[in-house]
Structure formats: C-alpha cells, structure tokens
Image 1 (cartoon, rainbow over the protein chains, first blue to last red):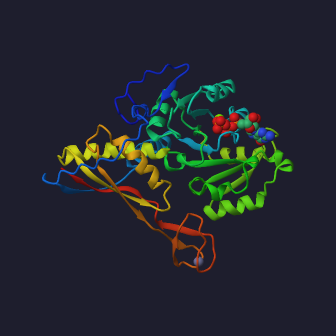
Image 2: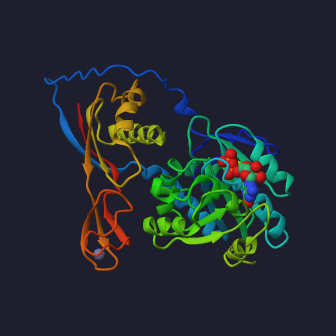
Length: 262
Length: 113
Ligand SMILES: Nc1nc2c(ncn2[C@@H]2O[C@H](COP(=O)(O)OP(=O)(O)OP(=O)(O)O)[C@@H](O)[C@H]2O)c(=O)[nH]1
Ligand SMILES: [Mg+2]
Ligand SMILES: [Zn+2]
C-alpha cells in the first residue's frame, strides 16, 4: 500500500530495479476519434449541478501530501524540467560527484521509456528510481508519492526529480517540490523563455547550461535573461557549463545553502 | 498532451459527484479555462469524446467558457488585460505584471439526469 496517499495500490516493483508505470489507465483509451452524437433526452428531468472544482485538484492534493512529507523529513526536493537533451541527467551526475559525501542524495527519473537515466545515476553512487510515464508527457504527484516510499528517501537529504524532457506539460503538475528548476542549454535558442512562458513562469531557478558552447552558437545570454524576467521577474539565474565545470560551484553552493543539515 | 490527463481528472471528478449527488448520466459539462492557463481548448475538445467513452458522460456535450487574462502592474499598480503571460503593462510598459485572473482550469457545472 502507498505510504503517503493510502490509495491501496500494491507495490509490485522490485527493490533493485524498480520501474513504475504511471497513468496506465490512460493507455486503455484508444486513439480513435468518433463523431459527435449529442443525444439529448429532453423528456427526462435534467438538472444543473454546480461543481466549481479545479481540474488539477486531485494532483494538487497529492502534491500537498508530498510537500508535507518532505517538510517533516527535511527533504529538499527539486523538480528539474527542460527540453530533451538540455543536460539534466549530466547535471545530476556531476552534482552527485561533488556533493554526495556532504548529504544523502536520491533521484527520481521520469522518461516515457527506458531505464537509461536511472542507470547513469546509480553508476554515480546514489539510489535512483525510474518512472516510465508511457504516453504521458509529465510526472504526476501520485506517482511521486509512491516513488518516495519505494526509494526510501533519507531525512535531511536532497531529492532531485528529473521530469520528462518537455517544456510544456510538466509546468502544470505540482509534485510537491520546493522549487522547479528549468534547464536551458545555449544550443536551444535565447527566445525559449517567451516561446514556452508557462514553464519559465513556474520555475524559481533557471540554469543556462552548456555555456562552453557559446562561441559556436548565436545565443545572446543577456537577451535570454531579459526574456526570462519578462515572464517571471523573480526568477533566479545561474550560467554554467556542466561538462567543463565553469561556474558549477554557484549551483552547488545554491544547493548547499538549502539542504537542511542534521 | 497533458490535456488527456486533465480529461481523465474531469472524468474522475464526475464519477465522484455522481455518487455524492446521485445522478447516473451527464449530458453537458461546462469547463472554465483561463486564457493564461497552459491548456489548449481545442485539445480538450479533441480528447473529450475519447476519454468520456464508456463513462457516465459518454456523448455529453462539452462547453468551454474562456476566462480573460487580468493582471496588476507591479510598477504602476494599475489593472491591465493580458493576452499572454509576458504581456507588458499597457500603461507604463513594465514587464512586471502579476496575474490575478486567467490561470483557471476548472469544471464549472454539469447538466445531469
Ligand atoms: N558541451 C556541453 N555538453 C553538455 C553539457 N551538459 C550536458 N551536455 C551534453 O548534452 C547531452 C544531453 O545530456 P543529458 O544529460 O542526457 O540531457 P537530459 O536533459 O537529461 O536529456 P533527456 O533526459 O533525454 O531529456 C549529452 O551528450 C551531454 O554530454 C555542457 O555543459 N556542455
Ligand atoms: Mg535525462
Ligand atoms: Zn504599469
């Protein structure tokens, strides 16, 4: 049974290589689009029912449960979002190398398919759990609640959730994290913040990654920062190169300040 | 396509209300979708029939009422209409406008039998 939400879902994942399937019920519905057949039975008594309920209310309720759990256990949780290939997994691997002796780190990896990213994290020496979302293009708070229990996240730790590579959908789904961190690499174009405003609006921190490639691409860092602030005046910004290490310590210092020591 | 997940939520909310308020069929669903929210009404319309198939809202009519975006300028404090999240203030040009309306996505009401 799920320790946080009490949903009664049995946990049939193995401890060594757990793979969770999120939103399996989504798969049941076929792709076929059928015509509209608005059959109104006007002779039956119809009545109006007020609902006034947010579409995300269920996800948000699970997210609040996760958030309460994180607070209680002093788990500093980040939700990392980006386009595919911006460098999230590489960033986590390098972060683990620098910080794993300072505090416990655990990682939840979200991808539509494969166990690749979780394997890379385990190779770096910390526990990781892969959630395959199948057709869904984002993680949801219910899946995260189960993952926390399966993973056995330690108190006073850093929990990094790498979301599915996608700059649109994950912005709507609160997972209970302390902050959304959006990773933008310089090969993607400096106008991404105004092309995908929802994500940059929802994030508290933007990492401009792969700055080592700046000499080879037409990416105006100042313009990118200006666009990001247009969408989100309060966003904090760190420029770095994950693979070359330039300014990487600004990011690790940001983390060290926020993970609660025992 | 997170619209599909959102429609799954709609279906679940309907099923819960059906038990609480004892109805067995839904003939119309009205959603309120803010213009600044990150859902695309057309994607909702596209997925609605598919997701509701086999549920108590099969063949129900979907009505979407869009809610206009509204913000308050952090610089000049005036209220401004917003078409998108990064619209600058129409009075002073400041990009720092705080959204106060238009991010909604909710089920408003249902017509049930
Ligand atoms: N030059 C350069 N390459 C980088 C940097 N950071 C990451 N990369 C490369 O970018 C590629 C993609 O990196 P990943 O870490 O797999 O990206 P990701 O965001 O996890 O990708 P998905 O999980 O598929 O969305 C790899 O080849 C990395 O080596 C950097 O700072 N500079
Ligand atoms: Mg990755
Ligand atoms: Zn103004």
